[in-house]
Image (cartoon, rainbow, N blue to C red; front, side):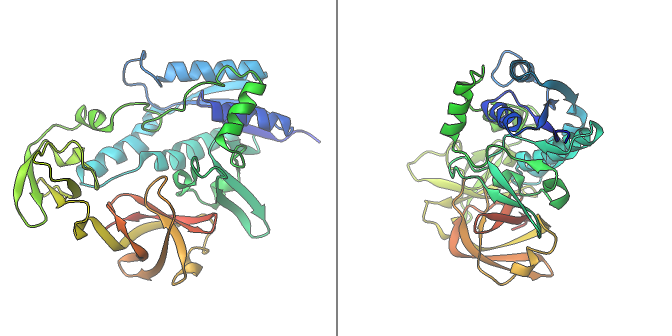
Length: 355
């Protein structure tokens, strides 16, 4: 029997490199793939694309696998970067990593896999794939501290069917041990941080290079103007630091109003305005068509941001979208964020928070 062929997204990090090792040990023919999606900035800084590609190429050579580079910078700017800027200008909180996975890794790279005659596409995400007679299921990673299923929450069945996630059953420490055992050149490399494919950069600095500052009022929930901001786009719900307001009282951003250029803040971390038990979400997707809808009115688990502990909730379908009611009030819910729904360990689908 010929070996099954896999196109593996290689970022130059330890997770995707160990994924290559595990796939080879399982008998797959592995082809490495590096995606060049962003080239702005100083190449001397951490996470520049040339440095990351060089590490990925060195691992591929070390393991004796073929390696390809795909330039999708134009597509990244259209599908991820433009979305991110548009959402911030609308006073919303986007998550570019979620759409990066949907459009780039499991969109354009999946198409490359098909062009190369590959049976599967693989990445180094900490999540799991399980297949049975009902379809392909996406489960949380075993390592609770590294679980990345949230970032895969917009994927659908046609993408999951072609997916392999080799390290989802492992703890991060085990992945490091495997890298050391195989003397991979990236075994001690630090985990990358920052915006997907852009790298380690402060978000506010990234935005200020692309959005002009425009002063406006910082207003409390009781209507008092207590300071000035440099542009509502540079703040996120729940933010405390960076407001430039003295006096000792803690203030937390709870809303941004593009129409009046105001940033609204709660007074203290116990201000009721900082918490909500209900949200409306639209544009929902399902990992298996129809499954999420069957859970309407039933107790589910959900998270509204990466690494947030799962929260108990119930949702119902309304004319406005999905109305989600949490058992416990949630802090700093932000329009534009994704809410991911789980039944135990299985991710059922996601939606975009509207308010």
